[in-house]
Image (cartoon, rainbow, N blue to C red):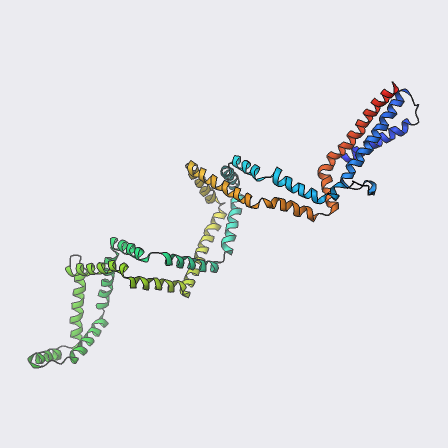
Length: 413
């Protein structure tokens, strides 16, 4: 039986008792009993009227100063909002509570409990997979391009080029590049068609020369004796021999050429015109469609590889996820200063978030209450506090009965 029914039963008992005692002798015990029931009936009716008047008009009669909650609806809403914002959930009390919670430790503890479950790890990986799969790669390309362009615009290309070239020479990349060029040149010179091409070029140039006197006679005799094949063979052998000499590490000409290459390379960062052309070239490359296509293909390839790894890990139950999380927690535990710093940052973030959105608590209460009609508001209040208020009626009937008995005894005596 709910409290409302109990209160109604108590009132009916008082009414029935009073009615019955009216037909009993008006003296002694019955006189006292009737006085108790009479006072209990009056007290029950008075408290019923008081409790009912809070929520509605008693018996539907618009008696003054009844249905108090609805008449003071706006005041009630303002009072509730004020109580929520300034008393129950004020900023200071929330902040003090958060300070005592140790948010980082609490977060780590909750995350550990969640990630210990295989189903939770699989679900987490499923969410990550969906995010990776649905991420628009084409929207990332402009962001990457803008980031690279911004970096290139503010970067010191001279310093970067100097460091890169210095590093390249320390790793002997200049010498390796020179040896690669010699190797390719040697392979090209050894080809038969190269010898034929060299012989033809030499013969054409010899025929263009016009040398007079005895030297001219000797030159013409030499040119007539030498065919294109012989000239090509001689030049080919000369080039092969020269390239072979340059490939030896103890060759003086090799050392001189490498020294000249290094000097030229070290002078490049100081050449403003070269640096400007380099910057312009970088801008053109970043703005071009080939860069966008290359970056999009690269992102799609990275997406495919990442999805493959994530799906494999999901099938295994996400053990790597928990292992990575555990390593992170252990790393934090070994560094108390960093833990304190992160905890302070987390507390500052949450406190700032609450401070900026604290007004939303009152706004939320106001919006929800304003959406409720009068009947719904009364029903909600009765469900929340009406049960306790019904005990006022029960207590009023019982207290009235006791007072009535006492007064009847005094009157009788």
